[in-house]
Length: 120
Picture (cartoon, rainbow, N blue to C red):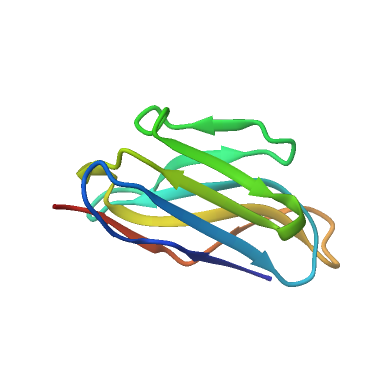
């Protein structure tokens, strides 16, 4: 089982980017999915989460600018980022609480980071 993230890049302030992350492998179910980020010299922080039923949660600094969504049929989670600011520059990591085939409970899996740079 693995999570594969994509969509990072260089964008000017005020611009937009869409991150994608898909889980692959033998998976029984996925509960909460989310995005975290880690800026240079800082701790990893929560950006947004989404439950299987669609309930969402955002950190205050991105509320109103970022939108998290998921496609349960594709085991995928997305992060639409708009009105980007230089302080959004970070490596973004997707996370999923999923139950692999043969497991009795859900385990947190992480994707590799995808770098987002907001700069003019």
